[in-house]
Image (cartoon, rainbow, N blue to C red; front, side, top):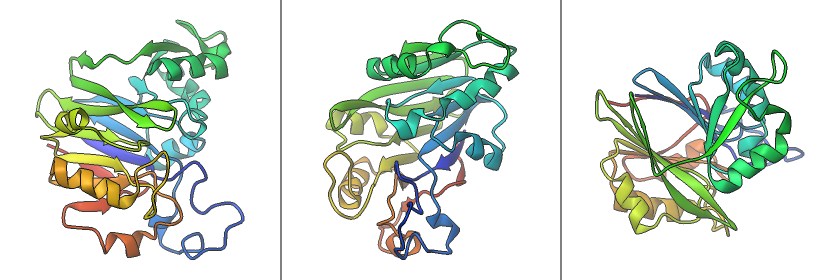
Length: 260
């Protein structure tokens, strides 16, 4: 299984507009964060999770040339606003629509934002085409299984995802944009080689886990490797990573992992 972190930043990105803080002025490339999304390749199946405002640029930077399945964790702008650029992947599929797996709220948002793109085929050549579908608890595919769960994020429920590759048994958990990870969600993640958790900033936040909260979850799940994502400009990559326990690190844009 291959995992590419296309983006690891918050809805404002880093550097932020009109901010002169040390992180926004940092020359460390790991402190330059586009909005959060991830690309997973499971036995040759290319799964894109979320499409941020910078999605086109992320695809070019990371040479993303194929998408077979698309999962929208929730309908907030920093996860959905780049979906129009999926039109190129519909072209590469010879005009066949991409299934968009999401929550009921996410499906409703897709239909509201992209009414011209809903259908089996594009309305015109070069347009996107989406088939919104509610994500099942287990999406069984020839290449493996993607399990989903619901995580609290303010007034929304967000999809948490666990990928299990059929050929290797490799297991990868992706829990972004959430305030907590409950016992059932922790149990679902156990056995993962890599777990990704929302770790917004050092201080608490009403709808996201902060770094100490994410570390408590990481200790309990006890995966060999845990990465924190959806990071604000309150996170200096070098300074904060130096304080993290063994086995826990900060994700950064362009990070590429091989699992299994």
